[in-house]
Image (cartoon, rainbow over all chains, first blue to last red; front, side, top):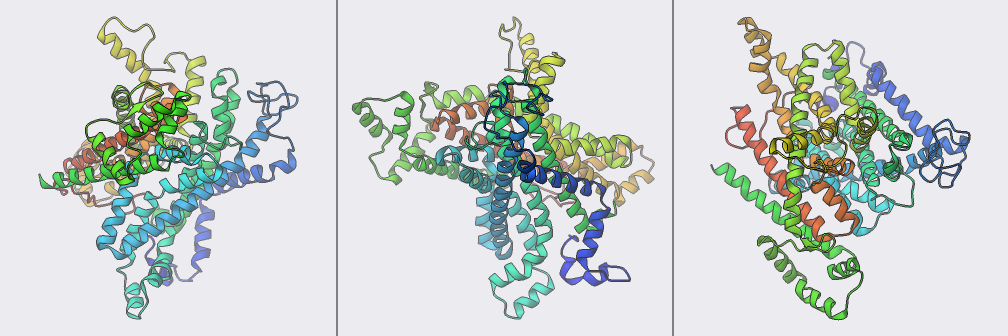
Amino acid sequence: MTETTSAPTAAPEATGPKPAHPALEFLRAFARNQSAIIGLILLALVLGTTFLGPVFYDVDPYSMVDMPFVAPGGEYAPLGTDYLGRDMLAGIIEGGRATLAVGAAAAVISVVIGILIGSLAGYFGGWIDAALMKVTEFFQILPTLLLAMVLVTIFGATLVTITLAIGAVSWPQVARLARAEFMKIRKLDYVQAARTAGARDAYLIFRVILPAALPPLVVAAGLAVGAAILFEAGMSFLGLGDPNTMSWGLIIGQNRNYLLDAWWTVTLPGVAIFITVLAISLVGDGINDALNPKLRRR
Amino acid sequence: MPPLVKRLASAIGLLVAVLVLNFLLIQMAPGDPVEVIVGEMGGASEELIARLRAEYGLDKPVIVQLGLYLSKVVTGDFGYSYYFNQPVLGLILQRLPATILLVVSSLMIAVVVGTLMGIYSARKPKGLLSHFVTIFSLVGYAAPVFWTGLMLLILFASVFPIFPVSGMQNVRGSETWIGAVLDVLHHLVLPSVTLASIYIATYSRLSRASMLDVLGSDYIRTARAKGLNERRVIFGHALRNGLIPVVTMVGLQFGQLFAGAVLVETVFNWPGLGRLAYESILRRDYPTILAILFFSAILVMVANILTDLAYGKIDPRIGGSRRKAPKPKGAAQ
């Protein structure tokens, strides 16, 4: 009730005797949060490894470098080899790119759809709200993973279809959040004032209300990236990912049958997923707390 | 009870929508169903193809085909699985109990453990265990569920072989029914704990936030002032309100729970709908996979209605089945 609506109206009184810029205030609160900083460092580590990794560790992830199932610490492969004798470290570096790209792109898609549907429903209310919420409910009763699996099977498994499928099934939570924010904000005085001044619906939605509704949506978007990464990993683990592109889930799925002989082949890519999602959620929580002074005090 | 009737009507409407979606998905699939079937069978004669086409009504307009499809479903005919070589409905009813068992027991573990963890860390926010709870909830959220399962599988297959890691029953079976039940429960441990791990994280976070909120409220102070002991205050007074967001979440996440079941069942070879979904997807067995989509929608629907009924029990302010839980301020989104 209190967290975001004050942004446009109450910025001056919220900041003690010396009014600081809200962005500065936010950064300060974020920097004080230990776990958020740890998350940021982990995230930088993950991004650095996946995107700069090939510069420092130039091994083809698709070709055989040693015998299959060489344990970590081997002569040719520091993190061991998989069931085809491919270098695990190179695979993890390479696989991170697909996983992160799909995760980020799918999250963007789901957030855009969610904001669009949620804002229209929350802004207009009435039958538009009722109809859009029926659609949302419809998507919420279908198990997302199952629906995405069907979509990918029908349209073929490429990075693009997987991204679209994940985005197309993961938006309902964002939509509900956006709707709640819009319903709250549209009643505020400054929105009424803008309306009285003759602003049209589109202007009110995107220029007047959306900026005020953004903070919780930004946090939701962060969490959506984490969820999409887990989603992508689950699909590629099941063998529904793009079979031609290395990804963390794919490595786990391909080596799964040998896990008792070669634990590292399934453990290490999972650790990579885990660290990535953990980092994103720590940063997301940090942003949330920094945006929300009431929670900060706890 | 009119609200419940309204709810059921809306549920049926949504299920019809799921069927229409299913139909559209079949239409969108490359090649028509007959080609898929013939492909699966490894080729067929022209005659058979023509007969199948007529049988499926593929020579008729799309809207007539939709009508045919719906009327078939109403009579319980979900088509024939050419891969499993039996009617889809029988296949699904065969696998359904295992999934319900897995999902319900995971949910119970998650709600009980998660809520207790949340209560504890709301009571003693600086305690050692609270930090553990925080860490655990982060781990539960960030670890992919199939990976958690695989890690447990490694642990319990080679290091501590005390739980079976695959299937639902002993190969040899049991002589007595009590032995059979215990055997199934023994097999259930790892899959249900794995599936619960994600939701323990969510529920402990949620119940922590809402308990913190509730414990700060006036009526709790009154209860303490009356001299009630702490146990009564927490479990008799605070928990009832503190649980509302958890109940909301259980209802909202039931579909996701089922999605998790697909992964967990695949990891532990649990013979439920989830693994059936995986198997039929790999075989492009569309009638089966679409029927699973439909039945999982029914499961979610039933869970939602039960959640609504649970609201009325927990919070007397909510009469009937309206979903108007007053969100405690500051609860996690």
